[in-house]
Length: 161
Image (cartoon, rainbow, N blue to C red; front, top):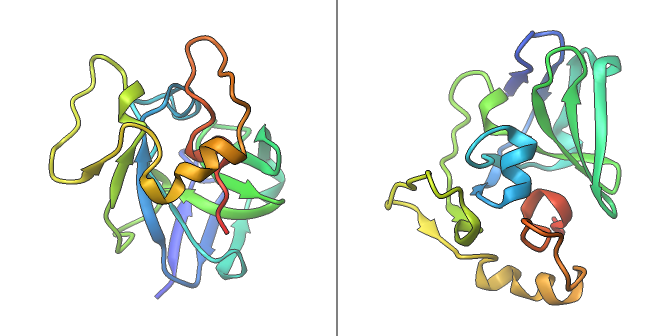
């Protein structure tokens, strides 16, 4: 069963012919700004399962780190997902039409969540990276964060290998 998604204005549309995986929500300061929200909510997929149905020419991109970027509709501003090594490889759950057949498996970087946010307690929470991703913080990140930001989190420089 295909998963379809679109931006707010509906001019950019896509289809995923596979399953989503590894759905999570990141609460770092960068994701809050990137999504204009308290956190991100996104899931990964196999890039070969993805296709644009309409509006690919309306996409704008922002490079968030080496090999990483986000793509959004230049008309309405919806963040649709992001790239890793120039391949579209994750989507925002809010742009999916209907039931994405996946639930958030964890909340990451809750140590830098907005002070006004309350996170439901029924999903695993991590202060920063989950243990299986902790090595990335040491090996793939600059060791000094910009003022008011955590060291690059999920959407900014995560390795999706």
